[in-house]
Length: 361
Ligand SMILES: NC(=O)c1ccc[n+]([C@@H]2O[C@H](COP(=O)([O-])OP(=O)(O)OC[C@H]3O[C@@H](n4cnc5c(N)ncnc54)[C@H](OP(=O)(O)O)[C@@H]3O)[C@@H](O)[C@H]2O)c1
Image (cartoon, rainbow, N blue to C red):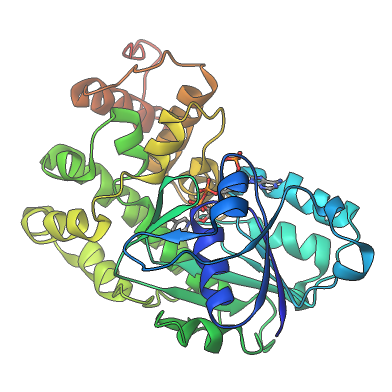
């Protein structure tokens, strides 16, 4: 492997691009302001590192001469809601990479990639390292976790990309079943994510409240039921014993789960605010919740299962992001949030009588 294009130079794009550049790979980052200028002038800065890493950052694929548009890997590092446009850009530029790596959280972007470039070329990545970008062109990677990757078409091999990343000290796991990997990662991502965004609470604040912890437990149990119905195994991911989490979520009664799991979930999340809360605070009209809790609810419905908690979280956060619900409708209001969830769940289970009105947010 010698040439890699990273499409989307945010936290993960810069992190993966930087690691690959350190391994001697020729990396091009398709970047947007404000990262673009900083990367060009100063290179990539990793907090605590002695020197910045010189990287090639471009503003547009059209800036690449035709003969430089051949890449062994296209790493798609934009958020889920930006994937469609990014793929259209790649196609317009006539890119024909040997393999494509989609690293988005949530479900479904791998199918978009496969529709563009074919299933055999599509690889799925689950990043378990939390990476923040406190300033443009500055990376703050956490110390735990790494990358798991799997081919979308079973049996395809990812060449030397895993070895190159592993050589930089990053735990890398190559797995066989992309769907099992994605759903297992989703179990980690969904914990104290949508609820924190809706309530504007930190993970620690949320998970300290037993009533709110119960919501997380219910949402996880819904996801696990979908996985079981689909025959998807829960798999461990670098730095995260997801199977243990799943067993605890399935079998522990809430009275034990709360004191045992809640503090571990809170510390597992680290100090980085939940991604959906960041999306909402950034004023984005779309968040990744549609590909997380929303995708679980959709898949549950497809399989004839109920997932009222995930549906509620997805619908509420989507409405907040779009402005269909007033900003801050549930800010620091667990009671209003829980009442609304109870009402929505009873509606979806057909228990609500015509006389019961939705509580106002
Ligand atoms: N950060 C983490 O710790 C972490 C960990 C695991 C997984 N993930 C997943 O990794 C994915 C990326 O997350 P991230 O945190 O790296 O997001 P991010 O920091 O927002 O980075 C995405 C970057 O891509 C840019 N972009 C979007 N569309 C583009 C296009 N068409 N051409 C060029 N650039 C484009 C964005 O620019 P604009 O901001 O201008 O749109 C942004 O700079 C997400 O699915 C996330 O869930 C993140």
